[in-house]
Structure formats: structure tokens, C-alpha cells
Image (cartoon, rainbow, N blue to C red; front, top):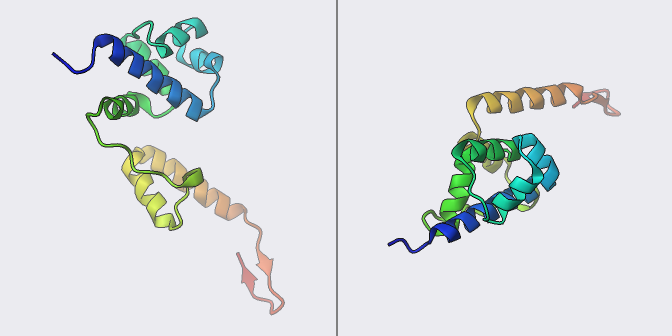
Amino acid sequence: MSAHSEQSIGSLLGKTLRARREVSGFSLRQAAERAGMSPAHLSEVERGLKEPSLGALQRIADALGGGAGEVFLDLAIALGAAPPRPVRHPLGFAPDPREEIDWAVEHLHQEDLRVVAAFGAFLASQTPNRTTTEGVTTA
């Protein structure tokens, strides 16, 4: 017999979803709307009173960002079946930007990485040029 009952797994799943929703900054109503369900139903899932279907779980995970794999990873960590996530730096920024790039490459899909790179290039192109007193243009 498993060390975790079905009820405790449902409760942990609900707590995992609630934590992800709160970190994402969505209210219960906003998350439910994005997932195409009622706030009451999402609330019952978060409290472990109802088990979502796999389709509903996918919609909730997508609505919160990160997808079902991230939810399952968080659940595996909560159940002790996976090591805890590495501690991220405050505000998500490492002292060495290369650490952030390594993290992004590890966690983002290729298309998402392309969007981030394009946005970075756009931001760089929007930076006004400044001229120093010596007449040399700097970024």
C-alpha cells in the first residue's frame, strides 16, 4: 500500500495548484475563467474536495502557465518522489546573467526562447544612443 492515500494526493494536488495560482498572481476567478471552469469548481479542486479530469487539469495548468508537467513535478516534489527545485534568486535574477540563460535554455521550449531573444533584440533597438562629451556614441 502506498504511503499516501488517494485523499492526501488529491489534497496535495489542490495545494500545488493553489500555490501555482498564487505565484502566478491570478485570483481564483481569473484562473477559473482562463481554464474554462467555474470559480466554485476550481476552489473545490484546490481544497482537495474534487479531483479534476486530466483534461481539466491540463486546462488549469495551462491557465496558470507552465503546463501539466510543471504541476506534476511540483506534486512529485510534495510527495517526496523528486528532489526539491533549486532555490531561485530573489526576483528570479541571478548575479551572473549566464545562470539565467542556462535556466531559460533548460526550461523553455525552443519557440519560447526565440520569442525571448526577439524581445531582447527589440528592447536593445529601442535604447536611445547617448553621446559622451568626447563625441563617442554609446548604447
